[in-house]
Image (tube, rainbow, N blue to C red):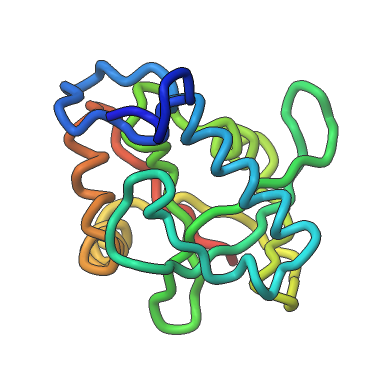
Length: 168
């Protein structure tokens, strides 16, 4: 698929993408994600609910948070806006990156330094990121894919296990 006009960046991941073929997100997808991150920095209440149809993900608005973390190479404070999921009173984020071959950079940074900050709408708190495994991951993954079926599609695009990260 392509942008809305000639010469515009591609805003969608081709649904015919084969396993381990997706190296990076299309430029148009990356641009929309960056615009959402910038909105979260200036108007977190409005950015909390975001409609990912702008990047080709159906289903209507989803809950998003702003993750603040430390860059493992630069040492700089970085932010990214991500869809989040809840199970009981816990919050988790998912490192799918559309099913790319590599994990998202934010995930690699959290593996290196799990202390982070999450902001859900206007409310924020410090957290410690923890990648779930085993039966805990299975429970989360079942809930994640029920709430956002596109995550199951992303898993078919990559042989890496998409991480589910709980914010303790």
